[in-house]
Length: 271
Length: 266
Image 1 (cartoon, helix red, strand yellow):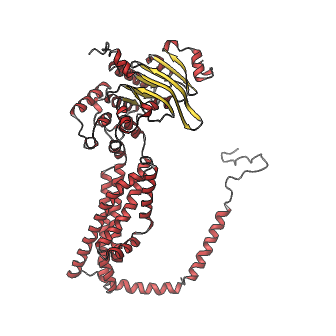
Image 2 (tube, rainbow over the protein chains, first blue to last red):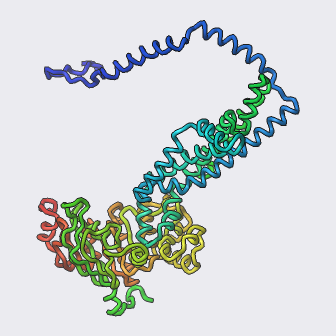
Image 3 (cartoon, rainbow over the protein chains, first blue to last red):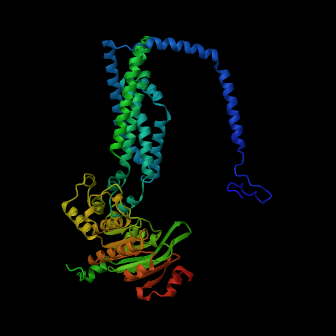
């Protein structure tokens, strides 16, 4: 008998199937494919339409080069970038300050159930809408400018950071908490000596990530009136200054990359 | 002070440290009591070992004493207070006088060894002092002395997660002694350790508590270790006390009563 002899055929009369077909899944997949075809016919997504679009795009890209670096434009760029940076930093700081108590309150292993549910409700509300929609609301409420941008990104930061803070507290080990309670330590002492050492490195990571993401989003909220480089970008589009648009886009890319490097370094520092 | 002949505390002080447990019940789920009417008086000296099968309520009993578990009914009288009825600040103050050593050490892994030992003083410090690590110099000096006593002086500023199991349990013991407790509880202190280290840890608990005249209550799986170090053995089964006496009195028949069956005794 060779080494590669087939496995002996089962002696049982009914063979057991190890991988039964999943018919509901197969039917679901087929329905999805049919719907995709149907939806694209409704929305007039046709090949000639796409080719026409490509032609427009080509002209648009052509008008972008070379990027505009006239001194007056650079001044606009500098002012806009500075404002965006300020919006991002302010929103991150304010978001963190609100998120710390809110995150602790939402952790069901530390806070009483009614408080935890109330905190969770606030967090869910903060997370419901995209920052751009929140920014539109704030622009209507407090008017155009950086304040609306800061408020919108603060809401987004609170939703993000406090949710992750709450989750990481719920995932921590309760053993040291129990031990410190047993020594007669007060609740705050337990938080400082048993909870914070376990979760602080992760908090730093969340905050660094949020700073990074606020930097990206601050360009976005500007487009709907929240101030910063987004406003400059939107104006440039409306004036058909496509070469200046390119300058702005390139600068934002560089800034976001720098932000990513800084947040990565922060996370590494506190591991 | 000569460690081999420690000064015994007065009878009156022993009396104050005596623990009275009366009619203690605990149900985690209604109708399924884990402890059924446990009544015990544990003198304020010596080492008392509680033995018994897993799930019989040993751990629950010990945790009821410092209220990590809330009893369903019954009284726990210690230093003139009914611990079962305490809340808030009163409970925290009572806990300061009761040290505890855990099966899985329960150290704060990311803190250093000395910080973990100093955690034993948290009940006496305002939170900002702990946060800024502004511990009183006397506490710090005592923490170093305790690290000497458990043989870990060289590791004081190492993080707790770099230690071996036996070393971590030594830190746990130092943290409990740091409280200057009137009672030391140990919940399966050797169950996560190898046999040799287990003996060393029991030896350390018995010696360090003995020379400080601290009464010890220890839950333990290992009957041999219990007989070797305990002055009194309490055998539990099915949520009640089924044996109570000195180690010499613990017979074969008692073990059958406590653990059931007898094949394992051969």
